[in-house]
Length: 495
Ligand code: BES
Ligand code: MN
Ligand code: ZN
Image (cartoon, rainbow, N blue to C red):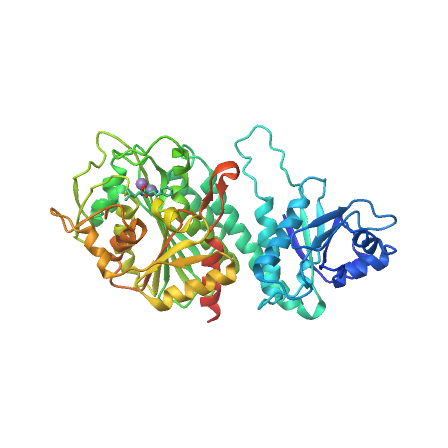
């Protein structure tokens, strides 16, 4: 989809649909007034008839406008005539997008940026408009015979006042970059496990590096990892016929020797559970167990596209977790790259086995901070549902910066405690630690496990098991937490 900023007066614009806001009590927004005036009071007529009460998210499509270069007008309810909360702003945008899906609307002009939103400037508003439209336009049709899409939208113009052009333009560039990153993450996530293998992910990383000068990619093969002593990681991939990969991306946008931000993403292209086999219902969704890895790729795409003045390392440990004669068995004891020994009490707690060696490997970059994201525990769904991602970490400043970014980005997070008391649950009679901590506090004990490999730097962990994809009728990847991470990077670049 094409996105652009437009400053021309509304009367002069030609488009398939003009989107304007209407507040409660029949109060028209500025652009609604303007189009009302140039259509002999058409909007007033609809509103006075009582067809639109102005509640947030309500819409009316006027689909025949006599003698106008504007083919249709979409009225969108904005609630009370006062500054909107960021959530309500998005609600109004979402309602607008959803009402544009059926008719054959190819180009649209959005005037909703003019509404006042609490603590938001034109940069933020422009970015949000693009993100919401982009999200709605995404459809996974690659593997269907009928490639017809629900939405035919090709062009979105965002109306901005002359005086705010600079901010709107920056918002446009950021929004486009983030949208592209989100689309890549969603596409990789939605691809099935028989196509999106560790090898495929590595190829996609190479493709990405070809597009951006400052982005380099190296892939460590199993033999390389063997030399590094990654016994925990390799114990998982031994049970799979697909060779494992440790994909490393290197984005050099900052000073030559500046310490990098390291992003690590769990890249299980399918998690059957191994010998501790999962149940059949819903197991297809374990193709999404690489969403952390896909988030790293999407976030680096966005960062490279925005040319952020930062050094960023992306690490994606990728494998399958399958039952096999050579797979991990409950009771097996592994030696991790750090030297710590691990008793495998449940082969389905595999993510942490890949991540612990990757966390150790990250030390060689002398990182400023390390952030990992992983679809790590079903327990996170029990604790937090599908609304926020779980956040745990060993550094308050980093956690607070992530929380602040999550608010701005509308990509929520909730911090859970990482108290020492929980470490007790990981004690093993036979090894330095066990890979599971029993049924209590599963998200926290998983993070406790990781924390033992992240002692030498500032580290945060995002459990995205509930937020990376939707289940049920609308099953599909969400692209989260790309918005949150890109916001964190934008904040770091400007801070
Ligand atoms: N990838 C899963 C976690 C998961 C499960 C995410 C369901 C989203 C939905 C992870 O590898 C796993 O299997 N975790 C186990 C850990 C347990 C054995 C301690 C789990 O959550 O059941
Ligand atoms: Mn598992
Ligand atoms: Zn898993």
